[in-house]
Image 1 (cartoon, rainbow, N blue to C red):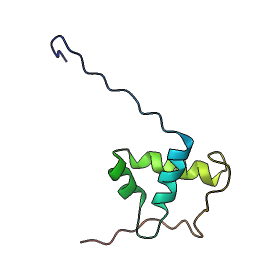
Image 2: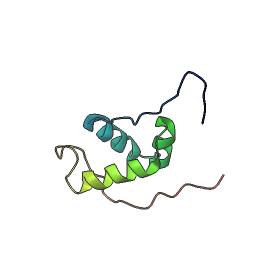
Image 3: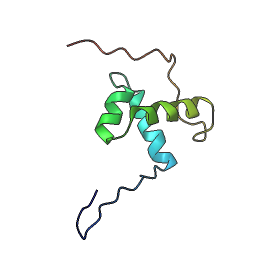
Image 4: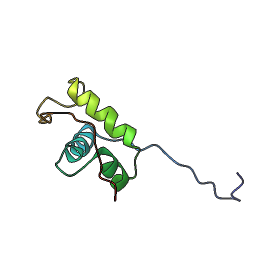
Length: 79
């Protein structure tokens, strides 16, 4: 797409490990969901789910993040 003399470029955001862990922890809070957190931070919910999986597998973080007792599917009540 031609934008005249100025070109707009989108760059990928680089999320730090502490930021990823903070968003995962936020998504595991009671009353929260991966979709809510993703929307609030303007990212794809798939990223939150991927980071959750990595935390559970011990591949993200140092193991200090408390995992939820149950990883139930997120059910959002219809309004």
